[in-house]
Image (cartoon, rainbow, N blue to C red; front, side, top):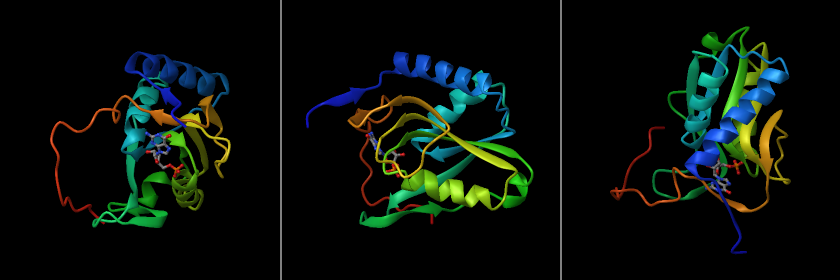
Length: 164
Ligand code: 5GP
């Protein structure tokens, strides 16, 4: 359909404060916020300030290979987070949206093996997501326009090779 969920930067600012308040009200105090690049970096930064958490880590996940072919499953790209940094830590995974939920499941399962506790926070969750996040700002089944990716890049870079 042509219907879009349009997130603007001003609404994003409000969403992050509300999402953080929900997490705080729930009594969850993460030691580490783990962002899923690239969209989750915006979410993690906002939550880190609002929750007064200074430890942000990052994991790169892509659905695509360097040659632009789509993979069946998302893959974690190098550098994979150091499991030792996570031992006995309370982790909050931050991402923009749980759509199929495959990306979040990959990162969540990685964390489960290494951490004391892991929960997930997203701005949006779609009904068909195979992961049910503990913290969701809004539920939608529409395609979402995010403010950081709704405009095309200011420069087009062909043949970029992803780290793997
Ligand atoms: P997944 O299907 O694994 O839950 O989502 C993987 C990634 O695809 C998301 O983190 C996001 O970057 C992108 N994605 C999924 N659904 C949408 C959407 O509705 N709008 C946009 N802009 N990106 C999406």
